[in-house]
Image 1 (cartoon, helix red, strand yellow):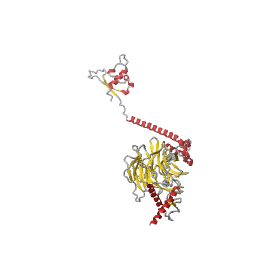
Image 2 (cartoon, one colour; image 1 turned 180 degrees about the vertical axis):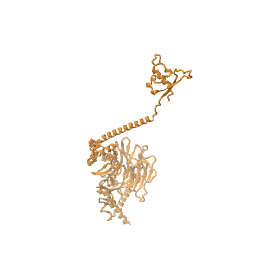
Image 3 (cartoon, helix red, strand yellow; image 1 turned 120 degrees about the vertical axis):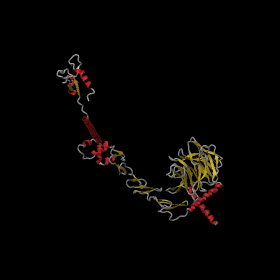
Image 4 (cartoon, one colour; image 1 turned 90 degrees about the vertical axis):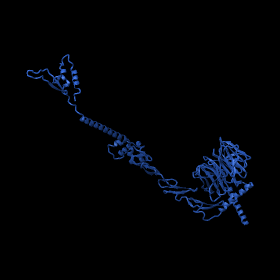
Length: 607
């Protein structure tokens, strides 16, 4: 039993030594989260690769050196807050991203840190004012839990002293900013530093040197980078300058590295001399967080507490390699090449396949509508040679779908959709409607064998006049539509002719209607009655008394209409007594006055 234990320890030592040598020669040393991707750099800050391009608001980042997994947060993703990224260090830089922590409320994850001794992931939430933790070593996968909840403090950056099992974080609350800490198993928390702080953001612990480092953003575009002992003593200001916005922080045994969101660059500061220099410029990408991969392997002399913690980490690394040391001949499928990278068994898949064992054919059922699948080295696929009328990464887009409106028919010409419009519409999508005069002109003039009387009218139309009404491609490709294009000027003639015809029709109808009304009026109007007036007059004829006769009385009817110009003096009857005067007599009233008196005496007796 004792021999087996010794052999196991020797094996662990050998495996760790191999992994240590490999890690020192690792192809990436630094990782930086930006707003849209994660950038990986070598030890001399040469950018090697980038990953996680599908995200748009990355923030915190941490690293598990045991399993070679990067943990990062994204504030914009609607489904999850924290993700894991497993990198396979080969020529193809294959990696796999998984959702780790699902989104529940309106969380905003800013700080992330991984404890390698306990495999617990901690993160800060500035919206809910909480610090969460998740033990990733447990197989029950109960999920994360709330570690601390604050009333007024706003936790932002978070770091772990894994040698002493203590968590440190920055409180960026404007009313009470400070550096706070708590043991992983304690319920209470304590404020370590509060004097002279404005808005502390990032924080990192050096457990080997027993130091903490933090950035403080002083309002007015000034910033500070400070350090102190784990108990808050020996506080040192390394940098205090304007025009920077330090949001991410990392350290090694010699330098401090911070991400400047204002100038979009990474700055290195020597821990002893405070000499600084720009080591990386990120162009248009805004940096957020920064980590160093080989932090453990760079330490030679550590304190007793850290020696025990570091031994635990080394054993975990060696055990992880030992569990992956078994090699199966048929492990990799589809002609995949089996690799043993630092004790990790994995497969290098040929083009067109992915997965842990190359079991996934990325082109299977990927292309539709006749597309040919083409795979790339990064494990993605694309479709080429789509059927005519289709496009897209999977040939899934019908370029004619919903292209033409109002009954138009879509045709393809040089892979471009062209609309043939129905009568009455025009435009690139048949979206514009013709006027009724357009249609009349087209109907009259589009026939090449039109009547001779229409030719002079249609010859007035020109192609330039019709270019705004008939699609250009129809004019160029269909000669039968040329008369239609030339018929634009027919509109004026057709319009004038119709207007004259309509006006004459209306006027004739009005005259005929007036004549009918006048005729009906004349027929139904009552005739004027003949005006008769009977006057009874007494002549001076005496009766014969001897003969026994009374004086005679004579009557005379005067029909006014029979009077010549109403001249009563010329009537065949004798005049009334009142008019017996001689018209020629100088004392008589004028004949005109006689006429008036005669008519006045007849008023009221005409009918």
